Structures are given as C-alpha cells and as structure tokens.
Amino acid sequence: MQVAADYMDFVKENKHYERLPLVYYELTAIYAGMYPHKPAYEPAPLLKKLEEYIALKTGTNESIYSQYGLVLKSKFLASLHRFKEATQIMNLPKCKNSFPSSTIFSLTKKVYLSVASSAIKDTKELLAEIKKERLLALRPDAYNQLLFLEKILLNNTKQFPTSPPPPQSKESH
Image 1 (cartoon, rainbow, N blue to C red):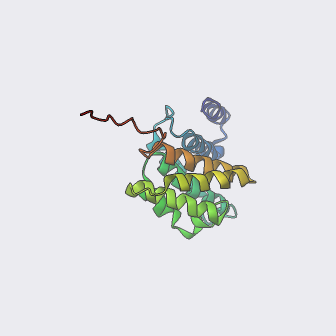
Image 2: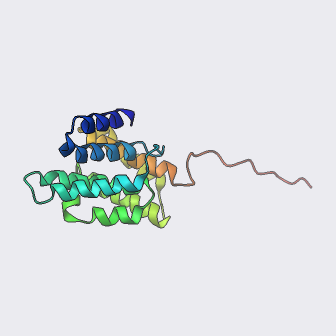
Image 3: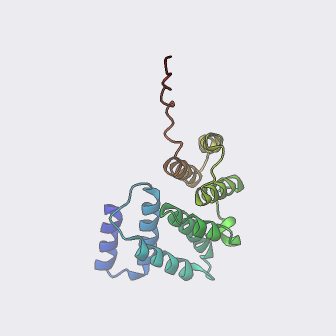
C-alpha cells in the first residue's frame, strides 16, 4: 500500500491529476487483494473513487476499463463482506463478460451467494474445485481471483480450519 501511496504523492506533486483515478483504482485493487487483512485506508472513499473511475471510463474508447472496474468493485465489496451487493454488480452484463472465464464467474457467484446466505454446502467440494481451477489458471487475474475466493471461503465458514472432533467421553458403569 505504501508504494501506491507514494505514487499518489508523486502524481500530486507533479500535477499529473489525470492519473489520479488510476492510482485510486490500484489502491482499491490492493485493498481487496489483501483480504482478510485490513489496510489503514478507509474503504468508503476508495469505493467512491472507484465509482468515479468507472464513470470516467464508461462510454469512451477505454470503456473496457470500466468493465474491469466493475469486476474490481464486486471483489472490493466482497472484501468488505457486502456479498449481496457484490453479486448485484456481477449480474450486470458488462461485469459478467469481464471475468477471466465463465467458470471463474460461476465460482465467484456461487461463493458470494453461499456466504451471503450462510448456506454453504459442500464447502470442501467447492474449495477443491476452486483449487483445481487455480492450478490450471494461465492468467494472473484468474489465479488471483481464485485465490481470493479461497480466502473468502476459509474466512467465512465455521468448518475451517478443519480439525477432528473432540473425543467423546464414555461413561463407565
């Protein structure tokens, strides 16, 4: 985070204000990627700046970046445990088409909805599927999204870390 903060200071000192939206985009990506650790930044201003970035790129010849911004926004909201909002963003066609693959989109949606409803079934199966896809990932964004999903599952289920049940005491007669 410090490198991004230093870059922001550099941009401001050199009056390259047109680069600030990208700096905030990167800060938001770092914040979400650090999950479950919480950086010192307040999330609300980062979310606002990310929304400004998305609006700035929408309808321009760089509109693909607004789509990536939507994917990041859903990830950022999930890192704040706002899974229902994250899923709503994912349902936007622009966002859905910007995931690294349809499989990753599907897994992401399944994890967010499961955690949001506290109805996680077959956690081990889902985790195994995510790990398998992560091992097959050819792109860094795909790998990072799958790693993020693992962290979400591991930090939002009571089943993990798994440990054997305590031994049952048998009453002697």
